[in-house]
Image 1 (cartoon, rainbow, N blue to C red):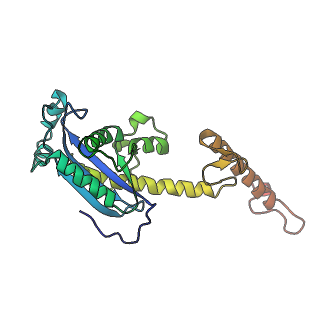
Image 2: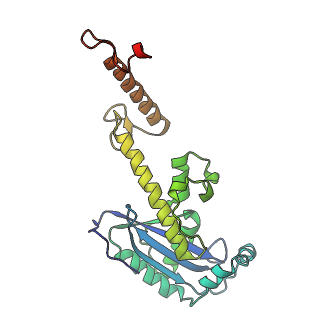
Image 3: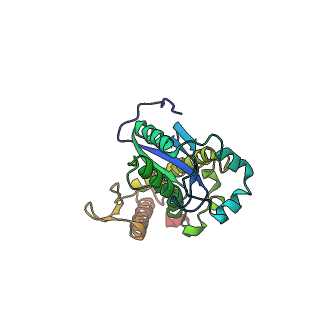
Length: 258
């Protein structure tokens, strides 16, 4: 399904293709991708299209015992991914064409990308011979790790800030989960952009990182140090400006009033 965007999207704008995979084992080849779905979002969280398909199992592949044991606990999701399964070659060719017709530049997004992209990349290369996302994928879990400061393995959805989580279902039905995690990513991206906007207002910001000079970008702890020094300098300037003068007397925030 595709929707007409509310605005003209430039060809170089990134479109975030949130993708969820349901499989009967941990890796493609010995095991099969049962179902997959993608939800394409703009950075400002506009949904411009979805794609989903249930797939026939690969010849000679079989379900992993532990995965199949888990599927027995999700009978409704299992039933949903077995409705009208398609030939993988037909479904993946249609999917690649769909991605390539999206406006802008597609970016694969998943949670965790290591699992979903492994299956999607394998299937696209096996049945289509190309991947419209190139060789890379954006991992929401890694983004959460960078934004929250939590240990990586603790970056699970129940621990994330609730403001990031829309009231959307997570059902283990591929399309439901692709929509849910796509909205999550857009919410995180919006907050990240706000953080970047705040940083851009600090002295020494050059767009890629805080800088000591125009030619020396710094990141991470070094950027935090520069930001701290800039804040201290600004506070000292404020105190000096608020100090007593012959004309005005003590400023309202000067040390004379503390």
